[in-house]
Image (cartoon, rainbow, N blue to C red; front, side):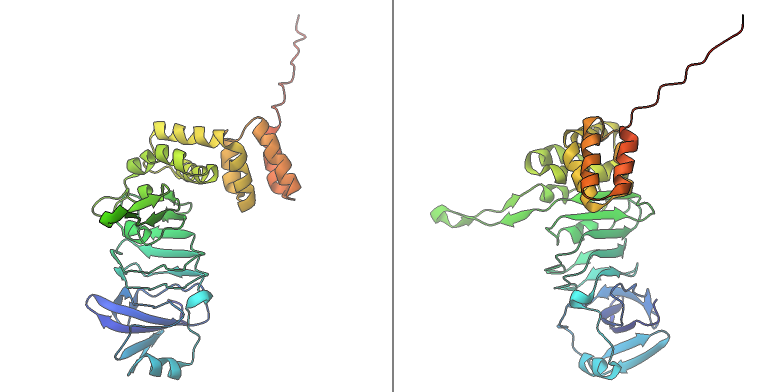
Length: 331
């Protein structure tokens, strides 16, 4: 735990419910326990700009010291510390023992980019990630085949997002495209249909009853995605699976490689825009970018003033030098 963090909390049925976090870092790593109580819940509106839905006494723990206050207003006034909330928050690492995210826990955290959580997470309330427009990455501190709450979290996020399992590099990485849902009315009978636009909803259904990822089901969605998604989205899905291929069959891997080669120019433009040199080297080494596509990518890198990327691409584009001739002068 960062000793400069001050955590407001209340007792909960399975440990402690985090109410508010105070401090000066936009990237808090939250403690596993508070005054001997495992942090099991993230309270309603915990990281939202305005704290709501909390009543009664609260405890404030900073380091090894804990104080009790009659309510949150008294605690915030007495502690006089900045609240880590709203658009100030950028990255949050939740304790491994968190089992529940209560309603609107991250509501209006507009600068939140990454969220890390453990395998214990099982329940996710409504509006948890409403207006989290910058959220790009979910990191699950678990093995790829382990039961987790990733599916529950993804069900609350319709925007495009990457999920990765722990490891350096990640043990597995999956890209989930954006989708939208609508409830159009069907004629005078007033029957409402539930329609989904985009393949993102299909990919989010690839979880078992216990919460484990079914990689084969995820990969099977790709054929449908090719008819619905943009080339860049297809490249994001394919490259994540090829670089971190947990549970990837050889047949699906070849389908992903073929898609990357079909959209080679889009693949290169995306990676250059992200300045993702390790990924760019991977696609070159695996011949996902080759031939004329390599030359075009090198020219684009030069125009964008990315000398390292241009040099990398030119190195793979250069034809192999012919073997030097050897002469034998023995008679």
